[in-house]
Length: 130
Image (cartoon, rainbow, N blue to C red):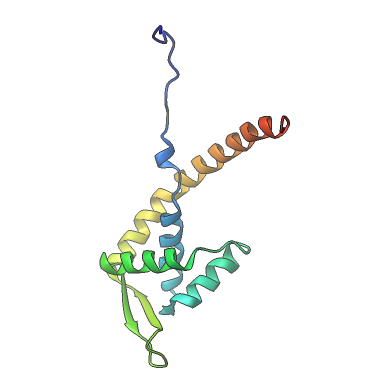
């Protein structure tokens, strides 16, 4: 097979498109700046903020656990129920939040561009459905 003499230049990588974990981390950390919250409160807030689009319970729990392990949030048991944990943002969480705030706008713009182009590409095949 002949080598491409006029290769297309890759300007970005799909790996730079905003990731679900970054969306969740950003939303959780932004909400925790208002005060400590239960996971269920944050889940409801995410659903409301994203107009009915939510996150899998297990994934939200996993992200909260990872944020705690990384020192970005502190978690403690609530007074009313041993199954409810409060979460609070830490100083490290504020540093991580600011890093996300700096990085995410470019990632979101790239995601919008990619998804718009991909939607158009999918549309080509939707016209020829069998």
